[in-house]
Image 1 (cartoon, rainbow, N blue to C red):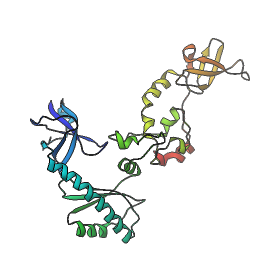
Image 2 (cartoon, one colour):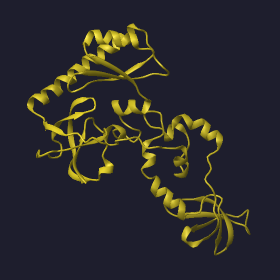
Image 3 (spheres, rainbow, N blue to C red):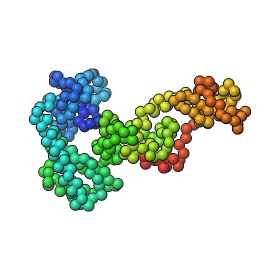
Image 4 (cartoon, one colour):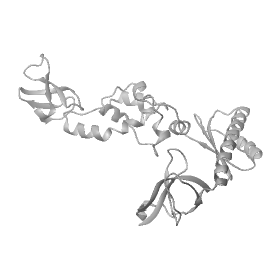
Length: 287
């Protein structure tokens, strides 16, 4: 076991482990640490604890110091540098007539590098742009192409629920979300109903998936054959949350379906949830 603290460098960013040494660290303290890309300043989001060595990517780097007033001043100055760098890069992209959208500029804590994040439909030859920017800022320049989900995470905004985007507030990593999840949760497969601000499937589809998988395990699906007190029939509708089923009885095929609780039937043959090929084809770009 090793003693570590968890440090985060961006809002809703990944948490990295560092050796706390003998510093009296508390939640939300700012600390200066050594990382693979140089000295960085981050926030303590996980207090000192013991973790297994298998959870740590060696070598475990150390906390160098608690952030000083000078360190805090550097952070504030870097924010202003990022604002100016963003405007400069945006102007240069226009001058070079490049088909790319600048999303964010980031100045590393030690000012050894400026990173520019952008989106684009395809590959972009930005070598001349990098040369121009290096001549202006006299430091290392790195351009990174990111996806539309990453753009939403960096920029933030409001979701269809009216709340700030999950990816920008607390999600450390993007979870895999599939069209099958929406189908299993009995949601409309209309893109406007299941897509987030980024245009991809909503991350929150993942939140309740475990509960829906359990309910699907104990609830006969659409098309299932079941035995009821009034005879055998086929499930034509189910409500996973309430457990109520509508069963069309074999002896009354043209009659009104029998409404019954899932606990009152015996499963003979379960149905299957299918996502049609045309549905997948229409929504595959949203995953």
